[in-house]
Every structure is written in structure tokens, then in C-alpha cells.
Length: 474
Image (cartoon, rainbow, N blue to C red; front, side, top):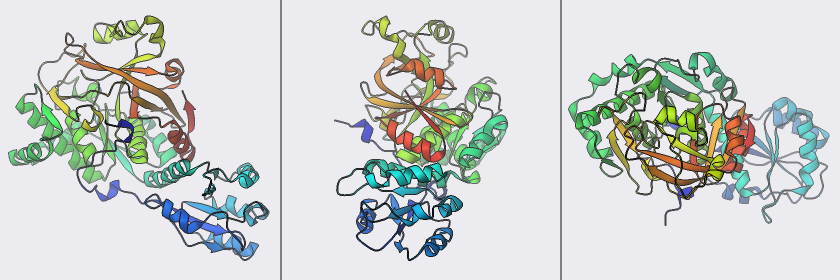
């Protein structure tokens, strides 16, 4: 039986260099001679592939301690203090100021034989935290690994970039608030025009398109009603966007479909491009929403798990759903109205959203004509993507605030994927059941949310702390 919370991102080949990042690097520093609280060689074996441990530096004097900390180079992500068990009289307690000056995180690792926190470092953590040091007392091995992955991701995000294509007229306006992402994470948001994307179409020949058909679509995708000329255009769109990403050395992209491409009559939609570029290691979001795209970066690069984004519609908003879909998409009889307060629909462009094949029960995503909306009718043009979510599976739903100060994290499950055969503009939607939908919807800043299989609340809480975000759990 498929374990969805264990499924990793599907990648077709070695990722481009700029999409890869190195493990966290720790500097073990032993406070004094004696039996150390952490067996550093053993820890290095445990953390293989997650972190690199430099050779331990044994401190000889307070002066040696201060010089050592100040001279650590920029490759070091955190200091790993090693001391003598049950004797909390270390040099970082007597001379903590240098830790404030250097500004590196400090990690007290859990006791390896017991996989529990090192009780004797509680007070040291409290004192260093009081002084403004970024200090962590690891509870257990899984949380320690999550912390190190978060530190590596933090370094990776600095100086990186993502691309949004199209006019900036949605509330996620890169010209207005893109700098919030840069301030908080160091990642730049680059704006390119639709004309820039479309101007590249002529670069790609019929042979280029046929190669993509034969090498990329054969096993994970199935044509199901899309016109062949529209599929060709979808491949051409993918190749053009990849060209831009390579040029910018960007992590990912989003196209402003409903604020630019679609409303001006275009149907060269990037749905298939999103799926194919995810397979190459890129991140992709709908409608040029770079805030949602940042959430997908956190899910994909931090957890190495597939994620999707879509519009979230609480089913209790009967009027809003009726105006948008022509009917309220109310749950079936097996879901009593008294329980609707925690149920929401997930839908975008006629289907559940851009669901990668590895997230579907069948292992396939179907290529159909673009689904349209109640307001913008489906007309057979464009290439949309149709994939189900696995019913009954636990999921984590996340949403970043536009000010990049809060990360909302919700526990939920997939109730079902519902088919709506009488609605050509909404053939399918996901029905999600939240633990606290009212609290989540009160806190989120957008209808776009990111969905990952499994319970990853604690993982994201740790990541939020490393990135300087407030984690709000629902």
C-alpha cells in the first residue's frame, strides 16, 4: 500500500547546480578536557548527508575560546558546544559575549544514548537566549535533523531568486511587496513580461516538441481530451519558461494567468510547464503568487516532498462559492451540515489544482483541455491538468503572510476528491477536513494554500523559528 507521507519529489535527472545546496556545517567546540557530552564522531555518522561536522576544537583558555569563535569562517552554520555531562560551568557561560558578537546559532545536541534533551543545558540555553543568542536545545534526533536542514535551507535562500511572469495586478504584487521576501529570506523576486515568454516560442522546433512528448510524457501523463495542437503549445510554453529560469538561475516561477494571460484571451497556460519543471527540481505556483511559491520552496526543498497549491474555499461560504462556481459545491449527504465548519474545497482552473503524478493514487496526471471558470468559459483551448488527491490521507496545509513574518500551519486530511461531471468549469475538487478551519482562515492572508501529505507541523514550526517567522498552529 502506498505510503503517501513517505513519497519524495520525483526528479528526472541531476538538478541544475543552482538548485542544489550543501548540508549544514557545524563546528564542535569542546569546553574542557574530559568525557564529552556528545560523541562527535558518532554524531557525524548519524548526520551523514544532513550535516558536515568540522574537527572538534578543544578550548584551552577564555582567550582561546574568544579567538576561536570570532575566527570561524562563513561556511559554518552553527556552533555545537561539547562539554562534560552534568557540570554546566562551561566557558560559554563565563564568557558568553563573544557568541553575541559572532551571531552564529548555538546547538546543544540531545543525548545520543537516550535520544532526549540534555537537561543540564536548560539554564545555559535560557541565559544565552536572554542575551540574544540564537540557541537551540535539541529534543531528539528527528527534531535535530529538521533543525539542521532548516539551517542549510536558510543559507541556500540567501541570494537566490524566483521569477514571476506577467502584469503585477493581484494582491501579490511583486513591485509592491516583493522586497518583503528579500528582507526576510534574502530571495529576490524578478518580474518578466508575457511577451518575454512568448517571444521565445519560435526558438523551439517540431523536433524539440516531439522529444519532450517521447521522453517526458509517456509514463506519468495521459492525454484525456486535450487537442494535440494545444498540447504542443503547452510543451512550447514549458520550454520557453525553462529558458527564462536558466537565464535567471532562478528557483522557480509563476505566471499571472487570471490577471494577464487568460483575461486577454491567451490560452498558452503553464499548467503542464509547472509539472515538467517540478521534475527538474524547480518550484512552480499558479497566478504568479510568489508568496505561495515561497511556501512551496519551504515544502519542496526543506522536506524534499511533493507539494501542490490551489484555491481554498470553506464550504460554509455558500454565497461566495455559488457566485464563483454557479453552485456551492456542498459536501454530500455523508457529511452532515453540522460538520461543515471544518470542511473546505480545493479547486483551481477546472480541477483540484496542479497535482504532480506522485501525489495521485493512480500515479498519473491527465492532460485535458483547460478548465476555465464560471466567469471565463471553457472553450476547448489550452492544456489543463487533472489529478486526484488520495482520500483519507493526513495532510499539512501551510500559508505565509505577505509581510513574511508569519507561517500558518494547519492539520487536515483529504476527505475525498469529488467529481462534478455537470460542471465543465470545475470537473473535480478536493474536499479537505481541517482540525481548526475557522482559526486558519482567520489567520491566512490569501486563498492560495500549499498542501503536503503527512503531519509536518513540528517540522514547519522548527523551520519557521530558524527563518525568523512566527509559527501559528491550527
